[in-house]
Length: 149
Ligand code: DAT
Ligand code: MG
Image 1: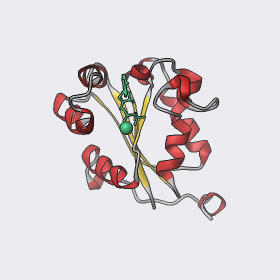
Image 2: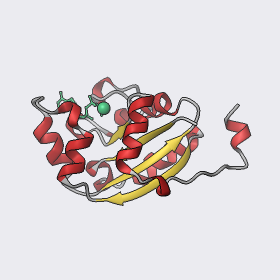
Image 3: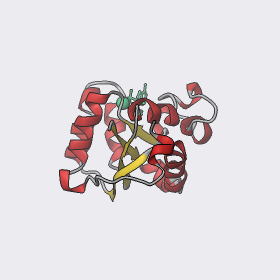
């Protein structure tokens, strides 16, 4: 089953949107695999955002993600990567589709509430970066056949 990493970033946590984000992913039909609430250290932040090193917003991005706790989760389902990106909305909240989380709750790219893996390969890599294998729960729901064809 395809898996993706989801982070509710410090602004999402501070604004009390953990439940809202989880609720939307649950309602979409996705299945939660793992979750933990943690303070992100410098090393984890730099590894996670290594691809953005050197960009003008990089320093601010690292400061933001390490500024307060985040909720880290793994979600799975058919096309989980694409589905979750769509539920989050475009990186810039003013370009995000109405009904998406970033459209409905955010205004600025540097305070866009959530992270979600952008490809299946990055999903695998990010899940392994943020979680140990024993933290990933392999389970099924009785409603799965009504959501997963
Ligand atoms: P996404 O989070 O949608 O995957 P990304 O990987 O391109 O977007 O960038 C990671 C984060 O960096 C993004 O959520 C917010 C921040 N960011 C990206 N582009 C930015 C910009 N031009 N100015 C400020 N922050 C930016
Ligand atoms: Mg990204």
